[in-house]
Image (cartoon, rainbow, N blue to C red):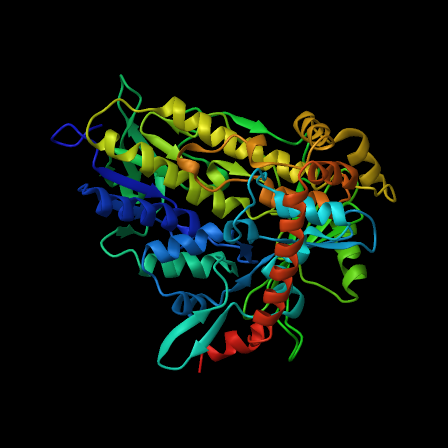
Length: 515
Protein backbone atom coordinates (compact mmCIF):
# COMPACT_ATOMS: atom_id res chain seq x y z
CA UNK A 1 0.00 0.00 0.00
CA UNK A 2 1.19 3.51 -0.76
CA UNK A 3 0.62 6.79 1.02
CA UNK A 4 -1.70 9.39 -0.44
CA UNK A 5 0.97 10.83 -2.79
CA UNK A 6 1.79 7.35 -4.10
CA UNK A 7 5.06 6.82 -2.29
CA UNK A 8 5.76 4.68 0.81
CA UNK A 9 6.29 6.85 3.89
CA UNK A 10 4.58 5.07 6.79
CA UNK A 11 7.23 2.71 8.14
CA UNK A 12 6.47 0.34 11.00
CA UNK A 13 8.95 -1.76 12.97
CA UNK A 14 7.25 -4.78 14.50
CA UNK A 15 9.12 -5.95 17.60
CA UNK A 16 11.33 -3.85 19.84
CA UNK A 17 14.41 -4.85 21.76
CA UNK A 18 17.85 -4.07 20.40
CA UNK A 19 17.08 -5.12 16.81
CA UNK A 20 13.82 -3.19 16.62
CA UNK A 21 15.06 0.06 18.09
CA UNK A 22 18.34 -0.08 16.16
CA UNK A 23 16.34 -0.53 12.96
CA UNK A 24 14.14 2.44 13.87
CA UNK A 25 17.12 4.67 14.70
CA UNK A 26 18.91 3.75 11.47
CA UNK A 27 15.77 4.69 9.51
CA UNK A 28 15.31 7.90 11.49
CA UNK A 29 18.93 8.96 11.02
CA UNK A 30 18.88 8.17 7.29
CA UNK A 31 15.60 10.05 6.79
CA UNK A 32 17.14 13.12 8.44
CA UNK A 33 20.31 12.98 6.36
CA UNK A 34 18.46 12.28 3.09
CA UNK A 35 15.71 14.82 3.69
CA UNK A 36 12.91 12.22 3.65
CA UNK A 37 9.63 12.75 5.46
CA UNK A 38 8.99 9.38 7.10
CA UNK A 39 6.45 8.48 9.74
CA UNK A 40 8.11 5.85 11.96
CA UNK A 41 6.31 3.60 14.44
CA UNK A 42 7.69 0.80 16.62
CA UNK A 43 5.15 -1.76 17.81
CA UNK A 44 6.50 -3.51 20.88
CA UNK A 45 4.66 -5.38 23.60
CA UNK A 46 6.07 -4.98 27.09
CA UNK A 47 4.41 -8.30 27.96
CA UNK A 48 6.90 -10.29 25.88
CA UNK A 49 9.75 -11.29 28.25
CA UNK A 50 13.46 -11.16 27.39
CA UNK A 51 16.17 -13.51 28.63
CA UNK A 52 18.79 -10.80 29.18
CA UNK A 53 21.88 -12.97 29.65
CA UNK A 54 24.26 -10.61 27.91
CA UNK A 55 25.28 -9.92 24.35
CA UNK A 56 28.42 -8.74 22.61
CA UNK A 57 28.75 -6.33 19.71
CA UNK A 58 31.37 -5.57 17.12
CA UNK A 59 33.03 -2.18 16.72
CA UNK A 60 30.40 -1.09 14.18
CA UNK A 61 27.99 -0.51 17.08
CA UNK A 62 30.24 2.13 18.64
CA UNK A 63 30.61 3.81 15.27
CA UNK A 64 26.84 4.03 15.01
CA UNK A 65 26.51 5.54 18.49
CA UNK A 66 28.93 8.24 17.38
CA UNK A 67 27.00 8.77 14.14
CA UNK A 68 23.85 9.37 16.20
CA UNK A 69 25.70 11.84 18.43
CA UNK A 70 25.05 9.75 21.55
CA UNK A 71 27.34 10.13 24.55
CA UNK A 72 29.38 6.97 25.08
CA UNK A 73 29.86 7.48 28.81
CA UNK A 74 26.14 8.01 29.29
CA UNK A 75 25.48 4.86 27.28
CA UNK A 76 27.83 2.82 29.48
CA UNK A 77 26.39 4.31 32.65
CA UNK A 78 22.70 3.92 31.73
CA UNK A 79 22.91 0.41 30.27
CA UNK A 80 25.47 -1.19 32.59
CA UNK A 81 27.56 -2.04 29.51
CA UNK A 82 31.26 -2.91 29.55
CA UNK A 83 34.10 -2.63 27.06
CA UNK A 84 34.90 -5.43 24.63
CA UNK A 85 38.24 -5.64 22.80
CA UNK A 86 37.75 -9.09 21.35
CA UNK A 87 37.21 -12.73 22.20
CA UNK A 88 39.40 -15.02 24.29
CA UNK A 89 39.17 -18.57 22.95
CA UNK A 90 40.04 -21.29 25.44
CA UNK A 91 40.55 -25.00 24.66
CA UNK A 92 39.47 -24.76 21.01
CA UNK A 93 42.70 -25.90 19.37
CA UNK A 94 43.36 -28.40 22.16
CA UNK A 95 42.69 -28.56 25.88
CA UNK A 96 44.94 -26.06 27.68
CA UNK A 97 45.56 -23.77 24.68
CA UNK A 98 44.17 -20.21 24.77
CA UNK A 99 44.34 -17.57 22.07
CA UNK A 100 42.95 -14.04 21.73
CA UNK A 101 41.04 -12.55 18.81
CA UNK A 102 41.41 -8.75 19.14
CA UNK A 103 39.17 -6.64 16.89
CA UNK A 104 41.55 -3.74 16.19
CA UNK A 105 43.48 -3.68 12.91
CA UNK A 106 46.97 -2.10 13.19
CA UNK A 107 47.30 -2.10 9.39
CA UNK A 108 44.92 0.88 9.34
CA UNK A 109 47.41 3.12 11.18
CA UNK A 110 50.67 1.91 9.62
CA UNK A 111 51.81 3.07 6.18
CA UNK A 112 52.66 -0.02 4.13
CA UNK A 113 55.89 -0.40 2.22
CA UNK A 114 55.71 -0.31 -1.60
CA UNK A 115 54.56 -3.62 -3.00
CA UNK A 116 53.11 -4.89 0.28
CA UNK A 117 50.01 -7.01 0.58
CA UNK A 118 47.09 -6.15 2.87
CA UNK A 119 48.34 -8.47 5.62
CA UNK A 120 52.03 -7.57 5.60
CA UNK A 121 52.32 -7.24 9.40
CA UNK A 122 50.61 -10.59 9.85
CA UNK A 123 52.98 -12.14 7.33
CA UNK A 124 55.91 -10.97 9.42
CA UNK A 125 54.49 -12.26 12.72
CA UNK A 126 53.58 -15.63 11.20
CA UNK A 127 56.99 -16.00 9.59
CA UNK A 128 58.65 -15.11 12.92
CA UNK A 129 56.65 -17.71 14.82
CA UNK A 130 55.00 -15.22 17.18
CA UNK A 131 51.24 -14.80 17.74
CA UNK A 132 49.72 -12.27 15.35
CA UNK A 133 47.80 -10.82 18.28
CA UNK A 134 51.07 -9.53 19.81
CA UNK A 135 51.13 -6.32 17.79
CA UNK A 136 47.46 -5.46 18.48
CA UNK A 137 46.87 -2.76 21.09
CA UNK A 138 43.66 -4.51 22.14
CA UNK A 139 45.61 -7.63 23.07
CA UNK A 140 47.59 -5.64 25.63
CA UNK A 141 44.40 -4.09 27.02
CA UNK A 142 42.69 -7.49 27.18
CA UNK A 143 45.58 -9.10 29.01
CA UNK A 144 45.74 -6.37 31.66
CA UNK A 145 41.97 -5.61 31.88
CA UNK A 146 42.42 -1.93 31.08
CA UNK A 147 40.03 0.80 29.97
CA UNK A 148 40.27 2.47 26.52
CA UNK A 149 39.67 6.00 27.76
CA UNK A 150 41.23 8.33 30.33
CA UNK A 151 38.51 10.14 32.26
CA UNK A 152 39.19 13.84 32.88
CA UNK A 153 36.90 15.76 35.21
CA UNK A 154 35.08 18.53 33.35
CA UNK A 155 36.71 17.60 30.04
CA UNK A 156 36.16 15.14 27.24
CA UNK A 157 37.63 11.70 27.92
CA UNK A 158 40.95 11.06 26.22
CA UNK A 159 41.11 8.02 23.93
CA UNK A 160 44.44 6.19 23.76
CA UNK A 161 43.68 4.39 20.50
CA UNK A 162 42.40 5.28 17.03
CA UNK A 163 40.40 2.04 16.95
CA UNK A 164 36.75 1.52 17.79
CA UNK A 165 36.18 -0.96 20.63
CA UNK A 166 32.94 -2.88 21.10
CA UNK A 167 30.64 -3.52 24.07
CA UNK A 168 29.03 -6.17 26.22
CA UNK A 169 25.56 -5.46 27.54
CA UNK A 170 22.15 -6.69 28.57
CA UNK A 171 20.13 -6.32 25.35
CA UNK A 172 16.92 -5.51 27.24
CA UNK A 173 18.54 -2.49 28.90
CA UNK A 174 20.04 -1.33 25.61
CA UNK A 175 16.69 -1.64 23.84
CA UNK A 176 15.18 0.57 26.56
CA UNK A 177 18.01 3.12 26.20
CA UNK A 178 17.67 3.27 22.42
CA UNK A 179 13.92 3.77 22.77
CA UNK A 180 14.59 6.77 25.02
CA UNK A 181 16.83 8.24 22.30
CA UNK A 182 14.37 7.71 19.46
CA UNK A 183 12.92 11.22 19.47
CA UNK A 184 9.81 11.41 17.31
CA UNK A 185 9.54 7.69 16.61
CA UNK A 186 6.05 6.65 17.73
CA UNK A 187 5.82 3.75 20.17
CA UNK A 188 2.79 1.47 20.37
CA UNK A 189 2.67 -1.01 23.26
CA UNK A 190 0.67 -3.82 21.71
CA UNK A 191 0.85 -7.19 20.00
CA UNK A 192 0.37 -7.58 16.26
CA UNK A 193 -2.31 -10.24 15.88
CA UNK A 194 -2.63 -10.22 12.08
CA UNK A 195 -2.33 -8.24 8.88
CA UNK A 196 -4.50 -6.99 6.06
CA UNK A 197 -2.86 -7.53 2.67
CA UNK A 198 -3.48 -6.20 -0.81
CA UNK A 199 -5.31 -8.87 -2.77
CA UNK A 200 -3.27 -8.26 -5.93
CA UNK A 201 0.27 -7.32 -4.87
CA UNK A 202 0.29 -9.25 -1.60
CA UNK A 203 1.82 -6.23 0.18
CA UNK A 204 0.87 -5.58 3.78
CA UNK A 205 -1.62 -2.72 3.85
CA UNK A 206 -2.29 -2.63 7.59
CA UNK A 207 -1.16 -4.30 10.79
CA UNK A 208 -3.95 -5.60 12.99
CA UNK A 209 -3.28 -4.91 16.67
CA UNK A 210 -4.94 -6.20 19.82
CA UNK A 211 -8.61 -5.24 19.98
CA UNK A 212 -8.88 -5.27 16.19
CA UNK A 213 -7.24 -1.85 15.77
CA UNK A 214 -5.65 -1.41 12.34
CA UNK A 215 -2.45 0.55 11.72
CA UNK A 216 -2.06 1.45 8.01
CA UNK A 217 1.51 0.92 6.73
CA UNK A 218 3.52 1.37 3.56
CA UNK A 219 6.61 -0.60 4.65
CA UNK A 220 7.25 -3.00 7.53
CA UNK A 221 10.45 -4.13 9.28
CA UNK A 222 9.95 -7.56 10.86
CA UNK A 223 11.89 -7.74 14.14
CA UNK A 224 9.71 -10.42 15.71
CA UNK A 225 12.66 -12.70 16.42
CA UNK A 226 12.22 -16.45 16.18
CA UNK A 227 8.50 -16.06 15.44
CA UNK A 228 9.19 -14.41 12.05
CA UNK A 229 5.48 -13.74 12.04
CA UNK A 230 5.44 -11.35 9.07
CA UNK A 231 8.28 -12.36 6.75
CA UNK A 232 7.63 -16.06 7.26
CA UNK A 233 3.98 -16.60 8.19
CA UNK A 234 2.60 -13.86 5.95
CA UNK A 235 5.14 -13.29 3.15
CA UNK A 236 6.36 -16.85 2.67
CA UNK A 237 10.11 -16.62 3.29
CA UNK A 238 11.76 -20.02 3.73
CA UNK A 239 14.37 -20.98 6.32
CA UNK A 240 17.76 -22.20 5.08
CA UNK A 241 19.40 -24.17 7.92
CA UNK A 242 23.14 -24.38 8.59
CA UNK A 243 22.89 -27.40 10.88
CA UNK A 244 25.15 -29.52 8.68
CA UNK A 245 28.16 -27.28 9.43
CA UNK A 246 27.33 -25.62 12.76
CA UNK A 247 27.10 -28.51 15.22
CA UNK A 248 25.51 -26.99 18.35
CA UNK A 249 21.72 -26.84 18.52
CA UNK A 250 20.88 -25.85 22.10
CA UNK A 251 21.93 -23.15 24.55
CA UNK A 252 21.55 -23.08 28.32
CA UNK A 253 21.94 -19.46 29.56
CA UNK A 254 22.62 -18.56 33.19
CA UNK A 255 24.04 -15.76 35.31
CA UNK A 256 27.08 -15.61 37.56
CA UNK A 257 28.07 -12.84 40.00
CA UNK A 258 31.34 -10.97 39.66
CA UNK A 259 33.91 -12.05 42.18
CA UNK A 260 34.32 -9.29 44.79
CA UNK A 261 37.06 -6.83 43.79
CA UNK A 262 38.19 -8.89 40.79
CA UNK A 263 38.84 -7.31 37.41
CA UNK A 264 35.94 -7.14 34.98
CA UNK A 265 37.37 -8.69 31.82
CA UNK A 266 37.11 -6.49 28.71
CA UNK A 267 36.60 -9.48 26.44
CA UNK A 268 34.16 -12.28 25.74
CA UNK A 269 35.34 -15.65 26.98
CA UNK A 270 34.47 -18.55 24.69
CA UNK A 271 35.63 -21.80 26.25
CA UNK A 272 35.33 -25.05 24.31
CA UNK A 273 33.65 -27.84 26.29
CA UNK A 274 33.04 -31.54 25.81
CA UNK A 275 30.01 -31.11 23.55
CA UNK A 276 30.13 -27.46 22.49
CA UNK A 277 31.37 -24.27 24.11
CA UNK A 278 30.54 -21.94 27.00
CA UNK A 279 30.43 -18.15 26.88
CA UNK A 280 30.94 -15.52 29.57
CA UNK A 281 29.89 -11.96 28.74
CA UNK A 282 30.55 -9.41 31.50
CA UNK A 283 28.15 -6.57 32.17
CA UNK A 284 28.71 -4.17 35.07
CA UNK A 285 26.40 -6.11 37.37
CA UNK A 286 27.10 -9.75 36.49
CA UNK A 287 28.41 -12.30 34.03
CA UNK A 288 25.95 -13.42 31.39
CA UNK A 289 26.86 -17.01 30.61
CA UNK A 290 25.65 -19.98 28.65
CA UNK A 291 26.58 -23.37 27.26
CA UNK A 292 25.97 -23.81 23.52
CA UNK A 293 25.91 -27.58 23.05
CA UNK A 294 24.72 -30.42 20.86
CA UNK A 295 21.82 -32.48 22.17
CA UNK A 296 23.05 -35.34 19.99
CA UNK A 297 25.63 -35.87 22.74
CA UNK A 298 24.12 -34.31 25.90
CA UNK A 299 20.76 -34.04 27.60
CA UNK A 300 19.97 -30.71 29.30
CA UNK A 301 20.61 -32.37 32.66
CA UNK A 302 24.02 -33.57 31.50
CA UNK A 303 24.80 -30.13 30.09
CA UNK A 304 24.05 -28.52 33.43
CA UNK A 305 26.22 -31.09 35.20
CA UNK A 306 29.11 -30.39 32.82
CA UNK A 307 28.79 -26.64 33.42
CA UNK A 308 28.79 -27.11 37.18
CA UNK A 309 31.77 -29.43 36.98
CA UNK A 310 33.74 -26.92 34.93
CA UNK A 311 32.86 -23.99 37.20
CA UNK A 312 32.98 -25.84 40.50
CA UNK A 313 29.63 -24.36 41.55
CA UNK A 314 25.89 -24.78 41.10
CA UNK A 315 24.03 -22.72 38.51
CA UNK A 316 20.40 -21.78 37.93
CA UNK A 317 19.62 -22.12 34.20
CA UNK A 318 17.35 -19.37 32.93
CA UNK A 319 16.19 -21.35 29.92
CA UNK A 320 17.18 -24.04 27.47
CA UNK A 321 16.95 -22.57 23.97
CA UNK A 322 16.85 -24.42 20.68
CA UNK A 323 19.42 -23.11 18.18
CA UNK A 324 18.29 -23.54 14.59
CA UNK A 325 21.22 -21.90 12.81
CA UNK A 326 20.38 -20.51 9.41
CA UNK A 327 18.93 -17.64 7.44
CA UNK A 328 15.96 -16.70 5.32
CA UNK A 329 16.08 -17.39 1.61
CA UNK A 330 14.86 -13.78 1.13
CA UNK A 331 15.12 -11.02 3.70
CA UNK A 332 12.99 -8.58 1.72
CA UNK A 333 9.69 -9.67 0.18
CA UNK A 334 7.13 -7.18 -1.10
CA UNK A 335 6.98 -4.34 1.39
CA UNK A 336 8.34 -6.39 4.30
CA UNK A 337 12.00 -6.59 5.32
CA UNK A 338 13.27 -8.80 8.16
CA UNK A 339 16.29 -8.19 10.33
CA UNK A 340 17.71 -9.39 13.66
CA UNK A 341 16.80 -12.91 14.75
CA UNK A 342 13.88 -12.86 12.32
CA UNK A 343 16.40 -12.82 9.47
CA UNK A 344 19.15 -15.14 10.71
CA UNK A 345 20.30 -16.97 13.81
CA UNK A 346 23.66 -18.40 14.86
CA UNK A 347 25.23 -19.66 17.99
CA UNK A 348 26.52 -16.46 19.67
CA UNK A 349 30.20 -17.08 18.94
CA UNK A 350 31.25 -13.98 16.99
CA UNK A 351 28.66 -11.30 17.89
CA UNK A 352 26.95 -11.72 14.50
CA UNK A 353 23.41 -10.81 15.54
CA UNK A 354 23.62 -7.09 16.36
CA UNK A 355 26.38 -6.59 13.80
CA UNK A 356 24.18 -8.18 11.13
CA UNK A 357 21.19 -6.06 12.11
CA UNK A 358 23.15 -2.83 11.83
CA UNK A 359 24.91 -3.66 8.58
CA UNK A 360 21.72 -4.95 6.93
CA UNK A 361 19.83 -1.79 7.87
CA UNK A 362 22.75 0.43 6.78
CA UNK A 363 22.77 -1.42 3.46
CA UNK A 364 19.03 -0.80 3.08
CA UNK A 365 19.14 2.93 3.85
CA UNK A 366 22.34 3.57 1.89
CA UNK A 367 21.19 2.01 -1.38
CA UNK A 368 17.43 1.43 -1.27
CA UNK A 369 15.53 3.77 1.04
CA UNK A 370 15.56 6.98 -1.02
CA UNK A 371 14.67 5.33 -4.36
CA UNK A 372 11.91 3.38 -2.60
CA UNK A 373 10.39 6.49 -1.03
CA UNK A 374 10.68 8.37 -4.32
CA UNK A 375 8.79 5.68 -6.19
CA UNK A 376 11.64 3.94 -8.05
CA UNK A 377 11.45 0.15 -8.56
CA UNK A 378 12.68 -1.75 -5.52
CA UNK A 379 16.02 -3.56 -5.88
CA UNK A 380 15.02 -6.48 -3.68
CA UNK A 381 17.15 -9.03 -5.54
CA UNK A 382 20.33 -6.98 -5.07
CA UNK A 383 19.57 -6.50 -1.38
CA UNK A 384 18.73 -10.15 -0.79
CA UNK A 385 21.86 -11.26 -2.61
CA UNK A 386 24.09 -9.01 -0.49
CA UNK A 387 22.45 -10.02 2.81
CA UNK A 388 22.63 -13.69 1.83
CA UNK A 389 26.35 -13.29 1.13
CA UNK A 390 26.87 -11.58 4.48
CA UNK A 391 25.19 -14.34 6.46
CA UNK A 392 26.75 -17.19 4.46
CA UNK A 393 30.17 -15.65 5.12
CA UNK A 394 29.33 -15.51 8.85
CA UNK A 395 28.55 -19.22 8.69
CA UNK A 396 31.90 -20.08 7.09
CA UNK A 397 33.78 -17.96 9.64
CA UNK A 398 32.09 -19.65 12.59
CA UNK A 399 32.54 -23.07 11.00
CA UNK A 400 36.32 -22.57 10.81
CA UNK A 401 36.44 -22.15 14.60
CA UNK A 402 35.65 -25.88 14.79
CA UNK A 403 38.71 -26.95 12.80
CA UNK A 404 40.34 -28.33 15.91
CA UNK A 405 42.99 -30.82 16.93
CA UNK A 406 40.60 -32.12 19.59
CA UNK A 407 39.43 -35.72 19.36
CA UNK A 408 38.91 -36.26 23.10
CA UNK A 409 35.09 -36.55 23.11
CA UNK A 410 32.46 -38.02 20.78
CA UNK A 411 31.33 -34.47 19.92
CA UNK A 412 34.76 -33.35 18.72
CA UNK A 413 35.30 -36.57 16.77
CA UNK A 414 31.90 -36.01 15.13
CA UNK A 415 32.76 -32.39 14.30
CA UNK A 416 36.06 -33.38 12.68
CA UNK A 417 34.48 -36.13 10.60
CA UNK A 418 31.19 -34.52 9.60
CA UNK A 419 30.83 -30.79 10.25
CA UNK A 420 33.60 -28.92 8.43
CA UNK A 421 31.80 -27.55 5.39
CA UNK A 422 32.84 -27.22 1.77
CA UNK A 423 33.37 -23.45 1.96
CA UNK A 424 35.56 -23.76 5.05
CA UNK A 425 37.64 -26.49 3.40
CA UNK A 426 38.05 -24.39 0.26
CA UNK A 427 39.24 -21.46 2.35
CA UNK A 428 41.73 -23.60 4.25
CA UNK A 429 43.08 -25.05 1.03
CA UNK A 430 43.45 -21.54 -0.39
CA UNK A 431 45.24 -20.29 2.71
CA UNK A 432 47.63 -23.22 2.75
CA UNK A 433 49.14 -21.56 -0.32
CA UNK A 434 49.20 -17.92 0.83
CA UNK A 435 48.50 -15.77 3.87
CA UNK A 436 44.87 -14.56 3.87
CA UNK A 437 44.52 -11.30 1.97
CA UNK A 438 41.82 -8.65 1.55
CA UNK A 439 41.63 -9.63 -2.13
CA UNK A 440 40.42 -13.11 -1.12
CA UNK A 441 37.06 -11.66 -0.07
CA UNK A 442 34.07 -10.21 -1.89
CA UNK A 443 33.23 -6.93 -0.15
CA UNK A 444 29.70 -5.88 0.68
CA UNK A 445 28.21 -2.99 -1.34
CA UNK A 446 29.50 0.36 -0.13
CA UNK A 447 32.41 -1.44 1.57
CA UNK A 448 30.22 -1.89 4.66
CA UNK A 449 31.91 -3.70 7.59
CA UNK A 450 32.26 -7.42 6.97
CA UNK A 451 34.18 -10.53 7.96
CA UNK A 452 37.50 -10.32 6.16
CA UNK A 453 41.14 -11.21 6.74
CA UNK A 454 41.63 -9.01 9.82
CA UNK A 455 39.15 -11.18 11.77
CA UNK A 456 40.13 -14.52 10.24
CA UNK A 457 43.87 -14.28 10.82
CA UNK A 458 43.90 -14.32 14.67
CA UNK A 459 41.50 -17.28 14.65
CA UNK A 460 43.48 -19.22 12.06
CA UNK A 461 46.70 -18.43 13.88
CA UNK A 462 45.27 -19.49 17.24
CA UNK A 463 44.11 -22.79 15.75
CA UNK A 464 47.53 -23.45 14.17
CA UNK A 465 46.15 -23.23 10.63
CA UNK A 466 48.56 -20.66 9.16
CA UNK A 467 51.77 -21.84 7.55
CA UNK A 468 55.03 -20.29 8.71
CA UNK A 469 56.94 -21.51 5.66
CA UNK A 470 54.45 -19.85 3.31
CA UNK A 471 54.69 -16.50 5.11
CA UNK A 472 58.50 -16.72 5.09
CA UNK A 473 58.52 -17.34 1.35
CA UNK A 474 56.19 -14.40 0.77
CA UNK A 475 58.48 -12.01 2.64
CA UNK A 476 61.67 -13.52 1.23
CA UNK A 477 60.57 -12.22 -2.15
CA UNK A 478 60.57 -8.65 -0.75
CA UNK A 479 63.45 -8.05 1.72
CA UNK A 480 62.58 -4.34 2.05
CA UNK A 481 59.06 -5.21 3.11
CA UNK A 482 60.36 -7.71 5.68
CA UNK A 483 62.69 -5.08 7.16
CA UNK A 484 59.86 -2.52 7.24
CA UNK A 485 57.52 -5.04 8.89
CA UNK A 486 60.12 -5.95 11.53
CA UNK A 487 60.71 -2.30 12.39
CA UNK A 488 56.98 -1.48 12.45
CA UNK A 489 56.07 -4.49 14.57
CA UNK A 490 58.67 -3.64 17.23
CA UNK A 491 57.57 0.00 17.22
CA UNK A 492 53.90 -0.91 17.66
CA UNK A 493 54.54 -3.30 20.54
CA UNK A 494 56.70 -0.72 22.31
CA UNK A 495 54.14 2.08 21.84
CA UNK A 496 51.21 -0.09 22.88
CA UNK A 497 52.95 -1.18 26.07
CA UNK A 498 53.66 2.46 26.93
CA UNK A 499 50.06 3.44 26.19
CA UNK A 500 48.78 0.68 28.45
CA UNK A 501 50.82 2.05 31.36
CA UNK A 502 48.73 5.26 31.33
CA UNK A 503 45.37 3.54 31.74
CA UNK A 504 43.28 2.64 34.75
CA UNK A 505 41.70 -0.75 35.15
CA UNK A 506 38.48 -1.59 33.39
CA UNK A 507 36.68 -1.98 36.72
CA UNK A 508 37.95 1.38 38.05
CA UNK A 509 36.89 3.09 34.82
CA UNK A 510 33.36 1.63 35.01
CA UNK A 511 33.00 2.52 38.70
CA UNK A 512 34.16 6.09 38.02
CA UNK A 513 31.28 6.55 35.56
CA UNK A 514 28.89 6.56 38.51
CA UNK A 515 30.82 9.03 40.73
